[in-house]
Image 1 (tube, rainbow, N blue to C red):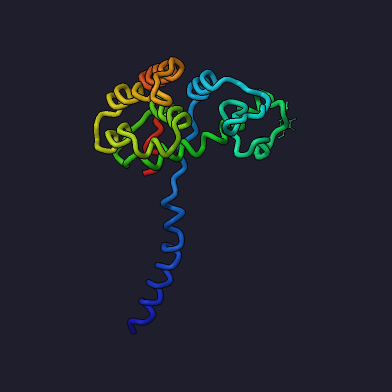
Image 2: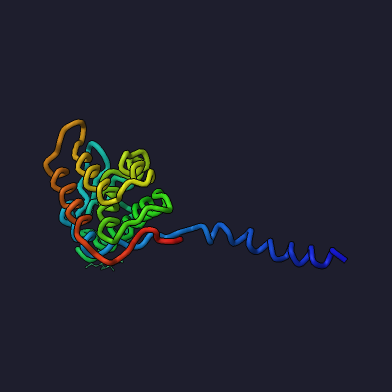
Length: 190
Ligand SMILES: *[C@@H]1O[C@H](CO)[C@@H](O)[C@H](O)[C@H]1NC(C)=O
C-alpha cells in the first residue's frame, strides 16, 4: 500500500536532485556603460600584440594574452575598437562572476557600485578579491558605500610602490560607486 506513494516521492526527488546545481548557478549581470567607459579609459587601447620578453603581452583593452602570440583571441589583428570591446566584455564575465558569487547573500550593490568592484577585480585579479579586506568587510555586513570608499583607494600599489595611475583609477572607481542610480545589480539571484 505504501509502495506506490514512495515511488511517486522517489520519482519526484530525482529531477530535483539533478536540477539543483542548475538552480544554484547564478550569472552576474553585465556591467553598465559607465563601467565599460571607465575600464577602457584606464586600460587604454592596444591594437597589436607586441613580443614581450618579460611576461605575456596584453592587447585590446587590457586583455592578458594566454600565449605569446595571443592566439586565443578570435579577432584579427590589428584589433578594431569594436572587436576589442567585445573581447573586453567577454573577459569581464569571469570578474562579474567573482563579485556576484563571492559576496554574501545580504550584500546589496547598485549597478555603479557593482561596476566599480568589477573594474577593481579586472585590475587586481579574482584571487586578490577573494582574500581582500574589502570583501571580508562587505560579507561581515558593513555598509557597502562606506567599505568601497575606504577600501578601494588602498589598492594603489604595484611592487610596493604607489602608482599614480592606480591612485587615479581607484578614485574614478570610488566616484563611479558614489554616483547614485536606481539600477540594482547585487544580489543578482535570490
Ligand atoms: C572583427 O572580428 C571579426 C571576426 O569575428 C572579423 O571578421 C572582422 O573583420 C573584425 N573587424 C575588424 C574591423 O577588424
